[in-house]
Length: 275
Image (tube, rainbow, N blue to C red):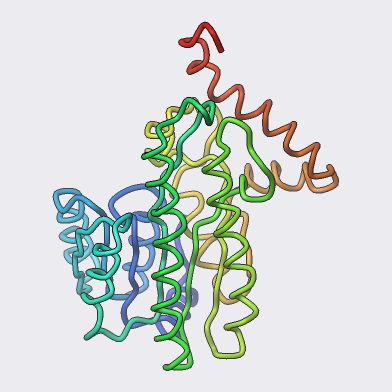
């Protein structure tokens, strides 16, 4: 899936010349970086590992002739967030794409507390800090865009992914509110809420995804929705899953998600005979 020429022009004119993309070394972040580069936006790419960012930056420079700045920092740490902010102080940034994040799964009380707290920092605290900083910059220049990666799990509690779903509920709520707060200031805010995506997320979360979209299937719909919607459900599978649950009461959605996530994490509990 590719952007039309008119769509590329719109992105470049409304949100250029520079875009900041977190989580840019893989998955949805990488796909969004590729699409933005094809539209001619210069990029600040952020991820933890420079050895993964460097080849991405080189490929984007060579293919699209854009400028790319690499910022290899860990946004789970406040110093990493500040380093990313400081690295863009001399740039005219018009777009922030926050796709850095990860998930855990399984029984909550058997999870690593330190890992759960780290996820809260990446999925929540870093999103808050970067949105606050770049939101102020965008309001000052009377234009800009912010894309926050939510998830279809944001719309109800999800047993066996309790903390992850809670972090995405925060992101979804923040984006919905800021979309209305910042619109009069010329700033567009979008919550992108995909369903299962094969992006490396499932390996870290130790989940079995039999049906999942690819990053290539969700990247373009997200960018097309920026400035036109406040929430986008990219991909046919996401729409089917969310719309099918629309008339179900919230408690029912939680029960359904228990069955869905239970199937995706069953292999974990099979290794724990007392669970």
